[in-house]
Amino acid sequence: MDNTGSPKTHFSGSVANLTAKISVEDKLSQEYYDAVIEKVFKPSWYVLGNLNDIPTPGRFFVYDVPTFNMSVLVVRTEQGVNAFHNVCRHRGKKVVQTKCGWAQGNAGVFTCWFHGWAYGKDGALLNVPDEMAFRDFDKSKYGLVPIKVEVWSGLILAYFGDGEPQPLKEWLGELYEGFEDYYTRMERIATFSADVKSNWNWAMDSFSEGYHTVFLHRNTQPELTGKKNPMRHAPIIDLYGHTVRTSGVANPDYVGPPAERALYKHGRKLSPAVETDYSELPPGVNRTRYTPWFFDVVWLFPNFAILNGPHWVSTLMIWPIDKDHSRVITDHYARKARHAGDRLAQAYMRGLLVSVTREDLSAMEDVQYGLSSGALKHIHVSQQEIVLQKRYAFLEEMIKP
Amino acid sequence: MTHPSLPDAFSDLQPFVERWCLVGQPSRYDQMRKAAITDLRLFYDAMLPRVDAIVEHLNSFPLDSLPPPEQALFDLALTFAEVAHPIDFKWKTAELDGVFPFERMNFMSASLLW
Image 1: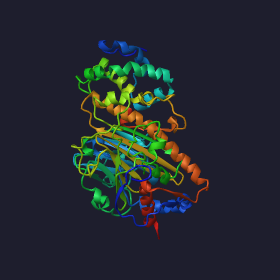
Image 2: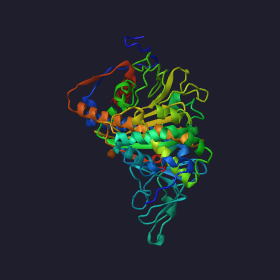
Image 3: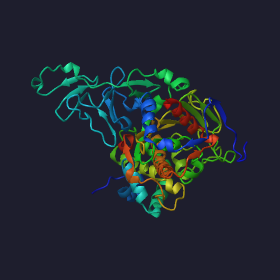
Image 4: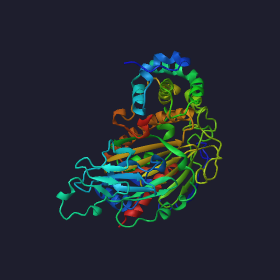
């Protein structure tokens, strides 16, 4: 116990080079930004979605990645999943138009409606109108440009760097095992995003600790705090290389407000209700079977967090746009609905999460304003904010000359 | 414009259909945040005691192929679920102060489908 009455956290893994004092000025410099994009963002894998988003051959989504100025077409095939640059090989227009950086649908053929060039699910160029007017032109050499993509535990990951990526198994390390049959049971229930005026680091910081939830989310998550753990100390924090896994604490006396109770009674207990039956959890989620447990968070540095709940998963992706702007994309999943009751529970969760997220988005813009003023040379964070410390140490290690 | 009719057993909720029988997350949330808290509470107070009966009725149909009256009831109930939290948490207004502008948020994918 510490002086707040909150229990101590069990830390495992490497705390080498961690510092509670984090310098500010360098994080806002163009040099730091450029180095991080080149040395950290480019050679990383990114979770773009869940295989259940595109359950049958021909189903596709398009995901714009502002950091790399890329538009990625991800399509389900009979064999698995393909990913391509969503760029027509003729004049370079997006083949599939996106809205708010996103598109989805079902297609056997992808036609660019600039000049009618058409591509198959395998990226092959199938049809060029007025093909005879092109000289020295071999259609077989003008398929969509492929992007490396792999499926792990039902999630779709892509790699945008040059050259060969670190194998996904190695990159995920300790997290590679333990999530079997977990994400595969989930269906997407919501996606919302916003472009914010905030450096990507401050945006990631917002989603890297539970400390803020007691205060920032006092209006939207008022019952999360238990009497025995008023500061919501995480019981377990596993610090790996460029990943972290934490188990978060629940309020054991959580009751929930009237509408939430009425709706979750008929469906599964979704966020922020407390599930005490762990029988359907895979070994990688709440790995110690800690009680009272709320949800785990897994961070894949540099810019991704997955909240692994009992019957729900939320993901937070922060894409740097430039050093002062970021795109925050939140995807929310829940166990597949069996009936109307489950769908109504999903609706309660996603409605509330819009309000919760608006609080986070507002705070990160205020942080940008505060820190870009130059008033602070450093920020001083706590042991409960060790995930920030770990990420900044990782970035430092990766960009050092 | 005519509004869909609810199943007979739920005709008492018909007055709420015009305003609250909505599809998709942005339209429901937008209606919520623009509502006077008293109007939101009227809808909440009418719907909350009927949740058990609504779910029992709807669960007897396949989720993805509801007859039109049942689909209207479902959309009304889904709207209730998405807009209930300001009343659940006893907010004084349906829109909190100081939060990120709703107009700057984008909704995609499943948020638009149902």
